[in-house]
Image (cartoon, rainbow, N blue to C red; front, side):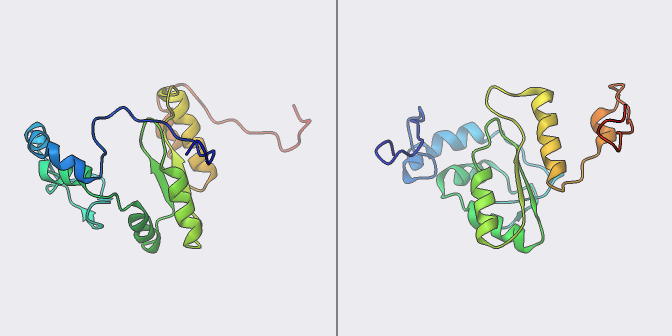
Length: 166
């Protein structure tokens, strides 16, 4: 990557996720994940493991092991969501690395879509989250601003219609 001037960094792990190397950890991971008690999902999501909508109860230890073992089918999931009419994708993580791939997939599919991160490494907290909400809003995502600012004392103000109006 360095020879081709591609940004890359080493990730300090003992195995390669989403590869056959994860098989060596199968029993240990299943044991560690055994206490996970899946329940019905309140927010539906499309699995990049199965390519199907997840109801919730199937998210047991075996599912999460398979998620770590198998290839992530992000492009297929994004294309399906685009085909089903979705156009806003929010990456909920401490460092949104998939937004670029989501945006490129939408562009390749000839679709308008917004791919937005929620937080950034070393930029967590409400300030960063508010910036992300603002980005989502400017990209056409409906934001419940009343709920966002509830209890803060913030109030709507009329903006001047002319730049030099005070």
